[in-house]
Amino acid sequence: MFDQIATSTLIDDIALRILLSVTTGAFWLVIILAIIRLFKIRNPNLKYFLLTIPLLKSLLALARSLPHFSDFKGVFIISAKLPNPGTFLPSIDWKSADSLYGSYFHPTTTISASTIVTILVASLIFSAWRMVGMVRFVRLINKSQEVGREENISLFDILDKLVEEYGISYPKVILLETSAAPFTIGLKNPIIALSTNLIDQLETSEMEAILRHETAHISRYDHLHHWLAVIIRDILFFNPVIHYLLPRLVFERERACDYRTTLKSKRRVLAKSLVKVAEIQAAQPASPLISLYAPQRFIPHTHFYFKERVKELLEPKMVHVMPGHIKRLLWPALMLALITLDIHLVTTVKRFILVLS
Image (cartoon, rainbow, N blue to C red; front, side, top):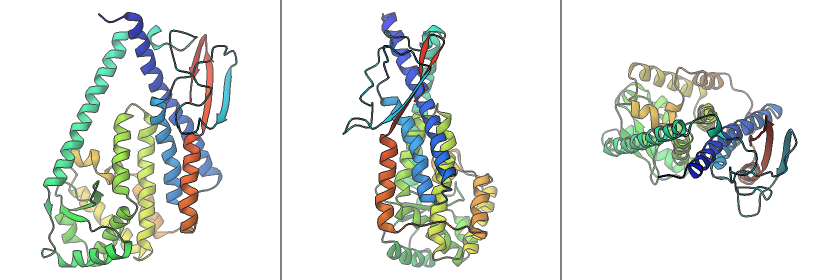
């Protein structure tokens, strides 16, 4: 028989971590959006890096030690400092949590333990279902028909040029009838998924623009970043901040590849290609598996973001691009600094201490 106090403590700990994940993600999202607005940042790569911060902060909040303030009497505390060297988790002022001591917010004081256990079990079942779906999606990709060079010489002539231009490994090209929109996937080896309708209906210049966009994803290793985002999304499925962030992350990723594509292809050709792909996809809806796990399906083509992509291609605005060596040093340094920076926001609610970040 389970010890009632130990069970209550465990449930409190889990509930506090979930709450902390949501509030920390929301807190950092506000900060990042303020930075983007204040400095009028338009560069899609920089915005992509910055919007990744709340995503990672929400994940780290689940693993960090909960704070313990024995003599807390203020209404709120805001402090900022780097954690101990070698760790991205708790800062030096945070001790291991024990919800039996101190005036912490206890979910079990207002919600029955059985209710919380039911929610946790349902969450585990949901997570398992998502993992099964991911495995099924990978199998669908692996079983799909591979396009041979002799079947479409012009397509591979375009790929030959792009692979040499971007200096990437040669991607595998597959036919996936359950999705009209092209996408790039893979772990060790990149895979470009196309549909028969897409190959048949796009002109040579349009196909080159689409393939240039997809190979731009490969050169950025987006096919790897995608799986990381999917895993975090499924771990933090309870967090509304994550569902707000993912479409915006994918949007900035697509903008970055659009920009690379237009360095060598005409903007109107790419815009026309995207609209044609959207029309084909509207007539041929994707399967549920594709909708859940394919990269481009995080943003529906009828969504505001798609319209913004096309509008930006037709009415380009100036995007400041930093030199490559500065970008390689500055962006990772900025991202690391923001990830390791702890801002602790603590407040009192009646007689309980509520940790927000």
